[in-house]
Image (tube, rainbow, N blue to C red):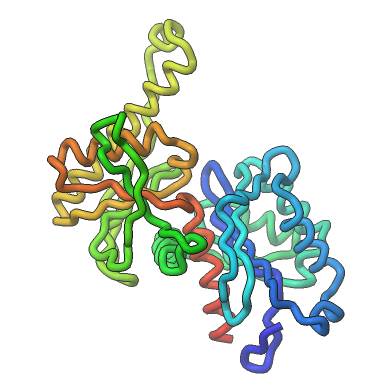
Length: 314
């Protein structure tokens, strides 16, 4: 293990973002473990590493997004891979119980976590798994995580992209976008709710506004159409609403770079192309909708980065 201030830095390294719908977990897997370190490594640490890296599904609902894995990173002086794992927030008690069964508290007493669920599940972590949650600001983690992942890139490719010719379905195609000089940017984070941030530098941002989701109130209308039609109509309504608000915020803040993130966009090409179309059409080509490959994981990455800062400060 790396020595910091004369102390061993303990694996495993996690960052968590506990949202209203999904829990996002990032796990750093060291690939430069020496023979001496492997001999010293305790069994439950080996068990956790093997469990996380040899599976792509955990139980009925946990998923490791293998296609998002970041390889050959150097984090806190160690070389390894960064894994991205998600599961429904409704399964959080199962996760906490697993942490207890694998005796996680013998390796760590504190986990870095962000999101509203960090407050909701704090007592359960302490009582069931003997773990303390170090709760972090959600928006700080989001921005720091996004900037970090964009800086390291996506295994040699850009993290950011846009849709060229968004108003022409036949010519519309995904294109890489360089976000090396991102400021100022309007960051629209779309999860269970929506937060719109004006970001002027790494440490200078403000929350401009936010929104939650509408409901189709008429039972007669709901009953007269198919579930598929209802889902698409709701998706279009929500997306157009968010696109309209984002455009107005960009105009008010005099920002011409709008970046969309969050798990609402995961495998949601309908919404991404709608946002790209709306931003291009209503701004007469002046505003470009930008998207990110790791969508909803930036808060968890930010929590992991905070773990490293805490270690350096000790």
